[in-house]
Image (cartoon, rainbow, N blue to C red; front, top):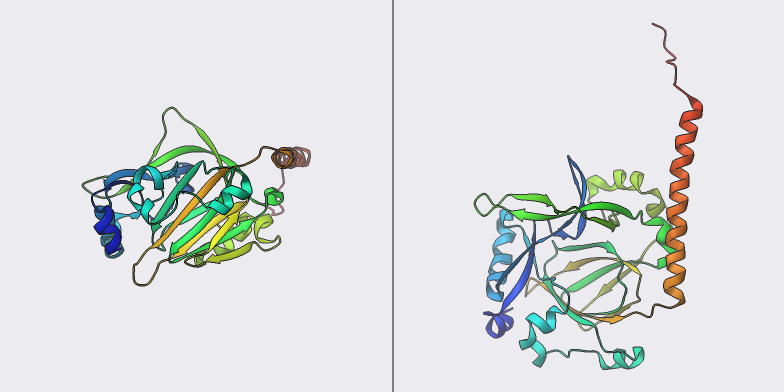
Length: 288
């Protein structure tokens, strides 16, 4: 990290802040479930490093994570183009495309990326630390419980440092996956009961990337990402390259599968409602 601080310490970067390291994820609240995005802050890179270190001993700071997408490596970390290429030449040749976006990711083990899919061919390269991917192919869409949630975002009070969830205005729905493939120990049984199709199906592909490794993640594959920081640097650093996918027969097939799953789920709900209606009110088996 000293090298990065020396080189880009004064450069303004976008930092995402959450109370628990889980941004762009489904959050349960007393008033219902929401799809919640992080609070975004612009700050010098060296301020991010200081905040990251401070947050490890004082959780009221939240969990900071450099994960701004939309080409963040080029737009915010261009000074590092002397250290890393803005494309993988062999991937560009194989796909006959230039990257649509190149993104950089810097954080520690507290930052987790919830399960989702992207409409990009993704080349994911680890620079420092490790990334742990949990993967499912698109044909497993019936197992991921896609659900629509009202969109919201985290807001942290500057005085109390308490986080709140603020629904978007006007309201907007986001379709997202609520399944956590690696729940906390005290949540395992509840998660398995809530999402039986996911946990009782074929095991996911588990893949760990070390420094210098590159993962080709095909478009529309579901992925959930954890990380282990480099023991000396205290962070994991990765760069990924998004190449536009071909909207060919695979996209059409996947769209058909999604609609089929949605229709089946609707029919199951309707059948349950009909069974309950046919059964009528239940009488107590106890006297008096």
